Image 1 (cartoon, rainbow, N blue to C red):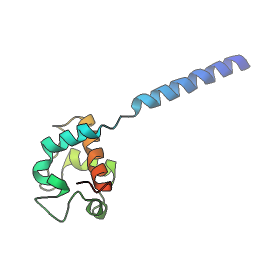
Image 2: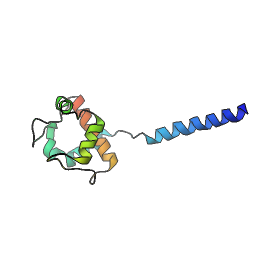
Image 3: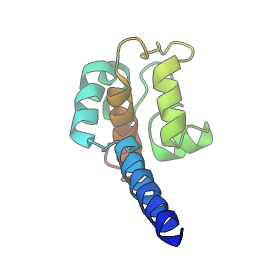
Image 4: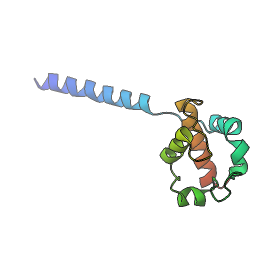
Length: 112
């Protein structure tokens, strides 16, 4: 009985570890930069905001307007807000994931 329990526990551990690793997405900042250049740079070149200069993509502004996380940036890209269009129907989940990471990376490293 102990052997069966041990065997079951081993299979469960292997399954859990393998399923978690397949869920995690790999970050591709180069792909995020390409998505940004093609879809965002017209209004957000250099991390600025040509429509509303107070709401730039600089870290202090992202934090000031509660957009300083990957989830908040992804939500903004997917759903848009005000004059910013929604991109959920134009970009894949992977593209949105990568561009959100690119934006936050640029902001955190002050490399706009």
